[in-house]
Image: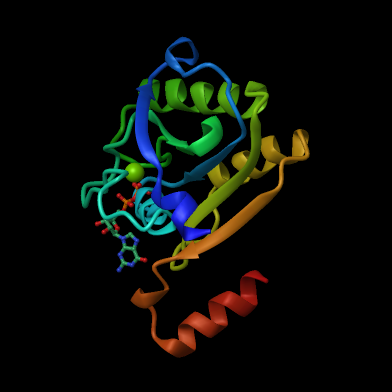
Length: 162
Ligand SMILES: Nc1nc2c(ncn2[C@@H]2O[C@H](COP(=O)(O)OP(=O)(O)O)[C@@H](O)[C@H]2O)c(=O)[nH]1
Ligand SMILES: [Mg+2]
């Protein structure tokens, strides 16, 4: 399986639905709060160090990034939401963009919702789940950054969210 994902390459970024690649094979979107670790997860899944750009500064990714897999399948890195310093107008614009992508992209087959295990679910996370549920999209919630917790706290969080 790994060998398949290792073949992922960056295809293109989009800021509007018009600049997205044509629907091809199937795609999986990675959603989550800014800085939750979406890009790091994609890199880990693909066993590549810098396929998706990671950043210590939250709020950097304002684009939907498409990574191509063999047979025209895609992994999609969505813009991170919920970063307080982003102006309200831009937040709304991203939200609209993400919503239209999640509700209208025909080839979208699943979503990985990446969450920092230390932070509770936000309204934005819930909006993602709502949009996914509206179209019966399977969701995998990935609790990231568990290395930042002690073993006891980690078990507590995992049990609490199960
Ligand atoms: N300690 C720790 N740091 C992580 C983990 N995942 C991501 N990071 C770091 O968190 C920051 C944000 O990660 P990034 O993948 O860019 O988040 P994104 O904004 O959701 O794409 C970067 O500095 C990463 O190196 C993790 O599991 N553990
Ligand atoms: Mg990112």
